[in-house]
Length: 272
Image 1 (cartoon, rainbow, N blue to C red):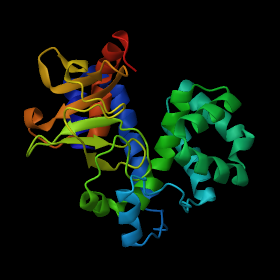
Image 2: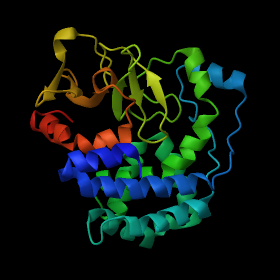
Image 3: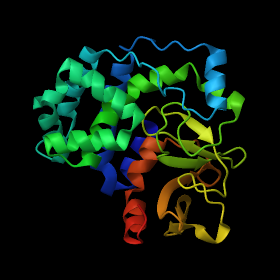
Protein backbone atom coordinates (compact mmCIF):
# COMPACT_ATOMS: atom_id res chain seq x y z
CA UNK A 1 0.00 0.00 0.00
CA UNK A 2 1.13 3.56 -0.73
CA UNK A 3 2.87 4.93 2.37
CA UNK A 4 0.99 8.25 2.23
CA UNK A 5 -2.30 6.37 2.07
CA UNK A 6 -1.27 4.23 5.04
CA UNK A 7 -0.31 7.26 7.10
CA UNK A 8 -3.43 9.27 6.37
CA UNK A 9 -5.74 6.27 6.80
CA UNK A 10 -4.45 6.04 10.38
CA UNK A 11 -4.34 9.75 11.21
CA UNK A 12 -7.47 10.85 9.32
CA UNK A 13 -9.96 7.98 9.70
CA UNK A 14 -12.77 10.10 8.22
CA UNK A 15 -11.08 9.62 4.84
CA UNK A 16 -10.13 5.96 5.32
CA UNK A 17 -12.78 4.50 3.00
CA UNK A 18 -12.00 6.97 0.21
CA UNK A 19 -8.27 6.34 0.59
CA UNK A 20 -8.77 2.58 0.31
CA UNK A 21 -10.76 3.17 -2.88
CA UNK A 22 -7.93 5.38 -4.17
CA UNK A 23 -5.42 2.60 -3.52
CA UNK A 24 -7.53 0.22 -5.61
CA UNK A 25 -7.63 2.76 -8.42
CA UNK A 26 -3.86 3.36 -8.27
CA UNK A 27 -3.27 -0.39 -8.51
CA UNK A 28 -5.69 -0.55 -11.46
CA UNK A 29 -3.89 2.31 -13.24
CA UNK A 30 -0.46 0.76 -12.65
CA UNK A 31 -1.64 -2.55 -14.09
CA UNK A 32 -3.15 -0.77 -17.10
CA UNK A 33 0.03 1.26 -17.68
CA UNK A 34 2.01 -1.98 -18.00
CA UNK A 35 -0.17 -2.91 -21.00
CA UNK A 36 0.23 0.37 -22.88
CA UNK A 37 2.70 0.49 -25.76
CA UNK A 38 4.50 3.77 -26.55
CA UNK A 39 2.82 5.06 -29.67
CA UNK A 40 3.04 8.84 -30.02
CA UNK A 41 5.82 10.00 -32.35
CA UNK A 42 6.68 13.71 -32.51
CA UNK A 43 10.14 14.90 -33.50
CA UNK A 44 11.87 16.76 -30.62
CA UNK A 45 12.36 19.89 -32.74
CA UNK A 46 8.69 19.88 -33.74
CA UNK A 47 7.66 19.39 -30.13
CA UNK A 48 9.74 22.36 -28.99
CA UNK A 49 8.39 24.54 -31.80
CA UNK A 50 4.82 23.67 -30.89
CA UNK A 51 5.35 24.41 -27.19
CA UNK A 52 7.14 27.68 -27.93
CA UNK A 53 4.12 28.72 -29.99
CA UNK A 54 1.96 28.20 -26.90
CA UNK A 55 0.22 25.08 -28.21
CA UNK A 56 -0.25 21.99 -26.04
CA UNK A 57 1.74 19.14 -27.52
CA UNK A 58 -1.26 16.83 -28.07
CA UNK A 59 -3.32 19.51 -29.87
CA UNK A 60 -4.15 18.34 -33.36
CA UNK A 61 -2.29 15.05 -32.90
CA UNK A 62 -3.77 11.60 -33.35
CA UNK A 63 -3.36 9.81 -30.03
CA UNK A 64 -2.92 6.06 -30.60
CA UNK A 65 -5.20 4.81 -27.84
CA UNK A 66 -6.24 1.19 -28.55
CA UNK A 67 -10.03 1.26 -28.42
CA UNK A 68 -10.32 -2.35 -27.25
CA UNK A 69 -7.91 -1.76 -24.37
CA UNK A 70 -9.76 1.41 -23.36
CA UNK A 71 -13.06 -0.52 -23.38
CA UNK A 72 -11.48 -3.20 -21.19
CA UNK A 73 -10.16 -0.53 -18.83
CA UNK A 74 -13.64 0.92 -18.30
CA UNK A 75 -15.07 -2.55 -17.66
CA UNK A 76 -12.23 -3.41 -15.26
CA UNK A 77 -12.82 -0.18 -13.36
CA UNK A 78 -16.40 -1.09 -12.47
CA UNK A 79 -15.77 -3.55 -9.58
CA UNK A 80 -13.39 -1.08 -7.94
CA UNK A 81 -16.18 1.45 -7.35
CA UNK A 82 -18.58 1.40 -4.37
CA UNK A 83 -21.54 -0.80 -5.33
CA UNK A 84 -24.71 1.05 -6.23
CA UNK A 85 -23.26 4.52 -5.75
CA UNK A 86 -23.16 7.30 -8.33
CA UNK A 87 -19.82 6.32 -9.88
CA UNK A 88 -20.81 2.74 -10.58
CA UNK A 89 -24.27 3.77 -11.81
CA UNK A 90 -22.76 6.31 -14.23
CA UNK A 91 -20.24 3.75 -15.48
CA UNK A 92 -22.99 1.17 -16.03
CA UNK A 93 -24.89 3.69 -18.13
CA UNK A 94 -21.80 4.52 -20.17
CA UNK A 95 -20.95 0.83 -20.70
CA UNK A 96 -24.50 0.18 -21.89
CA UNK A 97 -24.67 3.20 -24.21
CA UNK A 98 -23.95 3.45 -27.92
CA UNK A 99 -21.02 5.70 -27.00
CA UNK A 100 -18.92 2.59 -26.31
CA UNK A 101 -19.03 1.46 -29.95
CA UNK A 102 -15.48 1.51 -31.36
CA UNK A 103 -16.06 4.31 -33.90
CA UNK A 104 -17.86 6.40 -31.30
CA UNK A 105 -15.01 6.01 -28.81
CA UNK A 106 -12.46 7.14 -31.40
CA UNK A 107 -14.55 10.25 -32.08
CA UNK A 108 -15.13 11.36 -28.51
CA UNK A 109 -11.62 10.55 -27.33
CA UNK A 110 -10.42 13.08 -29.90
CA UNK A 111 -13.09 15.53 -28.73
CA UNK A 112 -12.13 14.95 -25.10
CA UNK A 113 -8.60 16.21 -25.72
CA UNK A 114 -9.79 19.16 -27.84
CA UNK A 115 -12.55 20.35 -25.49
CA UNK A 116 -12.86 18.27 -22.36
CA UNK A 117 -15.76 20.15 -20.74
CA UNK A 118 -17.95 20.09 -23.85
CA UNK A 119 -17.24 16.42 -24.53
CA UNK A 120 -17.94 15.36 -20.94
CA UNK A 121 -21.17 17.37 -20.92
CA UNK A 122 -22.34 15.71 -24.14
CA UNK A 123 -21.58 12.23 -22.80
CA UNK A 124 -23.25 13.12 -19.49
CA UNK A 125 -26.39 14.24 -21.31
CA UNK A 126 -26.41 11.06 -23.39
CA UNK A 127 -26.07 8.80 -20.33
CA UNK A 128 -28.09 10.92 -17.84
CA UNK A 129 -25.05 11.18 -15.58
CA UNK A 130 -23.51 14.03 -13.64
CA UNK A 131 -20.61 15.60 -15.60
CA UNK A 132 -18.21 15.59 -12.64
CA UNK A 133 -18.82 11.89 -12.01
CA UNK A 134 -18.32 11.03 -15.66
CA UNK A 135 -15.18 13.20 -15.83
CA UNK A 136 -13.72 11.27 -12.90
CA UNK A 137 -14.42 7.92 -14.57
CA UNK A 138 -13.00 8.95 -17.94
CA UNK A 139 -9.94 10.56 -16.38
CA UNK A 140 -9.28 7.45 -14.30
CA UNK A 141 -9.31 5.18 -17.35
CA UNK A 142 -7.62 7.61 -19.73
CA UNK A 143 -4.82 8.96 -17.50
CA UNK A 144 -2.47 5.96 -17.85
CA UNK A 145 -2.58 6.32 -21.66
CA UNK A 146 -1.89 10.07 -21.69
CA UNK A 147 0.70 9.77 -18.91
CA UNK A 148 2.52 7.20 -21.03
CA UNK A 149 2.40 9.41 -24.13
CA UNK A 150 3.51 12.51 -22.22
CA UNK A 151 6.45 10.85 -20.46
CA UNK A 152 8.75 11.02 -23.47
CA UNK A 153 8.23 14.76 -23.95
CA UNK A 154 8.34 16.25 -20.45
CA UNK A 155 11.96 17.35 -20.84
CA UNK A 156 10.79 19.51 -23.74
CA UNK A 157 8.51 21.40 -21.35
CA UNK A 158 11.47 22.28 -19.14
CA UNK A 159 13.51 23.40 -22.14
CA UNK A 160 10.91 25.94 -23.31
CA UNK A 161 10.00 27.18 -19.80
CA UNK A 162 6.23 26.80 -20.27
CA UNK A 163 4.41 29.38 -18.13
CA UNK A 164 0.77 29.03 -19.12
CA UNK A 165 -2.28 28.14 -17.09
CA UNK A 166 -3.02 25.01 -19.10
CA UNK A 167 -1.23 21.69 -19.33
CA UNK A 168 1.59 21.81 -21.93
CA UNK A 169 0.74 18.27 -23.03
CA UNK A 170 -3.03 17.88 -23.20
CA UNK A 171 -4.25 21.44 -22.56
CA UNK A 172 -6.26 20.60 -19.43
CA UNK A 173 -6.72 23.15 -16.67
CA UNK A 174 -4.57 22.54 -13.59
CA UNK A 175 -6.11 20.43 -10.88
CA UNK A 176 -3.84 21.04 -7.90
CA UNK A 177 -0.57 22.81 -7.13
CA UNK A 178 2.40 22.32 -4.87
CA UNK A 179 5.14 24.61 -3.59
CA UNK A 180 8.36 22.71 -4.15
CA UNK A 181 10.25 21.56 -1.08
CA UNK A 182 13.62 22.78 -2.34
CA UNK A 183 12.88 26.33 -3.47
CA UNK A 184 9.17 27.06 -3.00
CA UNK A 185 8.53 27.17 -6.77
CA UNK A 186 4.85 26.89 -7.64
CA UNK A 187 4.19 23.71 -9.64
CA UNK A 188 0.83 23.10 -11.30
CA UNK A 189 -0.42 19.56 -11.96
CA UNK A 190 -2.62 18.17 -14.73
CA UNK A 191 -5.51 15.90 -13.67
CA UNK A 192 -5.46 13.98 -16.93
CA UNK A 193 -1.91 13.24 -18.10
CA UNK A 194 -0.17 13.86 -14.72
CA UNK A 195 2.23 16.39 -16.22
CA UNK A 196 3.59 19.10 -13.90
CA UNK A 197 4.91 22.54 -14.88
CA UNK A 198 6.13 25.72 -13.22
CA UNK A 199 3.94 28.78 -12.87
CA UNK A 200 4.24 32.23 -11.28
CA UNK A 201 3.35 32.33 -7.60
CA UNK A 202 1.39 35.59 -7.83
CA UNK A 203 -0.72 34.92 -10.92
CA UNK A 204 -4.07 33.18 -11.32
CA UNK A 205 -3.65 30.08 -13.50
CA UNK A 206 -7.23 30.40 -14.78
CA UNK A 207 -7.65 34.06 -15.79
CA UNK A 208 -3.94 34.98 -15.45
CA UNK A 209 -4.73 38.01 -13.31
CA UNK A 210 -1.75 39.49 -11.46
CA UNK A 211 -3.87 42.00 -9.55
CA UNK A 212 -2.55 41.31 -6.04
CA UNK A 213 -5.59 42.57 -4.08
CA UNK A 214 -7.74 40.03 -5.97
CA UNK A 215 -5.45 37.07 -5.22
CA UNK A 216 -5.64 35.51 -1.79
CA UNK A 217 -5.33 32.22 0.02
CA UNK A 218 -6.65 30.62 3.18
CA UNK A 219 -5.80 27.69 5.43
CA UNK A 220 -7.86 25.85 8.04
CA UNK A 221 -7.15 24.68 11.60
CA UNK A 222 -3.53 25.83 11.64
CA UNK A 223 -2.72 23.43 8.79
CA UNK A 224 -0.18 25.55 6.91
CA UNK A 225 0.80 22.66 4.64
CA UNK A 226 -2.54 22.74 2.82
CA UNK A 227 -4.06 25.92 1.47
CA UNK A 228 -6.58 27.21 -1.03
CA UNK A 229 -5.43 29.84 -3.54
CA UNK A 230 -8.36 31.96 -4.73
CA UNK A 231 -8.91 34.61 -7.39
CA UNK A 232 -11.62 37.19 -6.79
CA UNK A 233 -11.54 38.22 -10.44
CA UNK A 234 -12.64 34.89 -11.94
CA UNK A 235 -13.89 33.26 -8.72
CA UNK A 236 -11.77 30.16 -9.30
CA UNK A 237 -9.65 28.30 -6.76
CA UNK A 238 -6.90 25.70 -6.63
CA UNK A 239 -5.72 23.64 -3.67
CA UNK A 240 -2.01 23.85 -2.93
CA UNK A 241 0.35 21.69 -0.86
CA UNK A 242 3.36 23.47 0.64
CA UNK A 243 6.10 20.84 0.69
CA UNK A 244 8.33 23.17 2.72
CA UNK A 245 5.87 22.83 5.60
CA UNK A 246 5.02 19.14 5.19
CA UNK A 247 8.75 18.42 4.67
CA UNK A 248 8.15 15.70 2.09
CA UNK A 249 7.26 15.36 -1.60
CA UNK A 250 3.51 15.62 -2.13
CA UNK A 251 1.53 12.81 -3.73
CA UNK A 252 -1.23 15.06 -5.05
CA UNK A 253 -3.65 12.21 -5.72
CA UNK A 254 -3.57 11.40 -2.01
CA UNK A 255 -3.48 15.03 -0.91
CA UNK A 256 -6.58 15.74 -2.97
CA UNK A 257 -8.54 13.14 -0.98
CA UNK A 258 -7.52 14.35 2.47
CA UNK A 259 -8.27 17.99 1.60
CA UNK A 260 -11.85 17.42 0.47
CA UNK A 261 -12.99 19.72 3.29
CA UNK A 262 -11.10 22.57 1.61
CA UNK A 263 -13.15 22.07 -1.55
CA UNK A 264 -16.33 22.41 0.49
CA UNK A 265 -15.12 25.58 2.18
CA UNK A 266 -14.01 27.16 -1.10
CA UNK A 267 -17.37 26.45 -2.72
CA UNK A 268 -19.22 27.79 0.31
CA UNK A 269 -17.33 31.05 -0.27
CA UNK A 270 -18.50 31.17 -3.89
CA UNK A 271 -15.41 29.82 -5.67
CA UNK A 272 -15.59 27.12 -8.34
